[in-house]
Image (cartoon, rainbow, N blue to C red):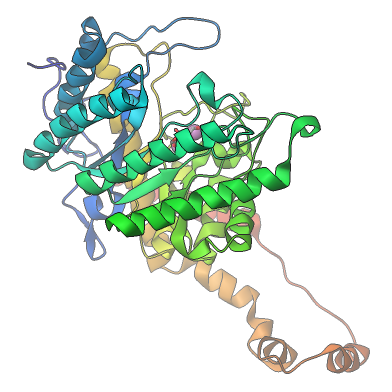
Length: 441
Ligand code: XLS
Ligand code: NI
Ligand code: NI
């Protein structure tokens, strides 16, 4: 049966098209450089927002009209799988992502939960045989159920640590079965509410123990997907230990975990941490740790994780700039960890939202590619740091300078001249490139 009767397959019709259910810029087969748009962008649908989320907020109940909601329990879980693969097919989407609790309801016991999961994973596996859509990543939800009130791997309660380990063990087995490209760790409640009751050292040590066990188990079962850490500074915790890329990187290095992980960077988490999206991508990239992206955007007027579909072309362009400089995302992708607004409650809105996100990143890709091809910012950066290619600068880089030689050099300096950073000029250039791509019909 069809859940989205009013929607046909969404195809590329070009910027002049007036069909709201068509792509205007995302043309999966179109080549940008030596890769197609589909290969560059590796779009993914987030199961939780699209098939589970109902639009509830702290002040009101759900508003979403979802044809599968006439079912409940395991029937609902099965209907969601049917709806999911219908949407994947109609959007021609190459990947999807889920938490364990998104796909199957928890049972009365962990054993029963496993059985529910197995039934649905069987079904998903069957669908995947004939669908092009692959699993970008899965993860375990270690934050919703009351047992995780004090965290999971960082809980003060060892029983909870054990329970969380069992859920991740099962998650890795599912990842292996479904051929997931990655496995994600987002520590929603791995943080603290007050230092007055918190043994921070023990909690961090335990988080590292937990992740080492996960690395060992993946090796044991031969799961070769990439492990990803998804930083977020807060919410639901007051302070999350994976605050931002720099903090999580220090943690991974301290505990000998760096070689086993990369980062899954979410735009709205970056802004919650007081950074831009591109800042987090840059920090990960220069350390060789850029793994995947949760593509969404926040609302600058609201101070929480609003998970909006990405439509800010500045942001998608600067993100794609980092991704292209990284040589792509490898096993990662652009996962729409994004939800339609509470007021956008019709099933068709799920399509409009994904089309908006996909077109926005397609524009970002094209603009970023041209900027790099023309070496617009590279030549500026090269020129700006030129003093390190010769003379005293070269000596600093080559390790030939020390405080003695530098002092001797400085004492002889007559005057020091700096040059303008030209920010405003560069932003105009960025605008010009953006307009060129958008206006060229
Ligand atoms: C929540 C996170 C979550 C992760 C997966 O803010 O973004 O959705 O991506 O657990
Ligand atoms: Ni996320
Ligand atoms: Ni988030």
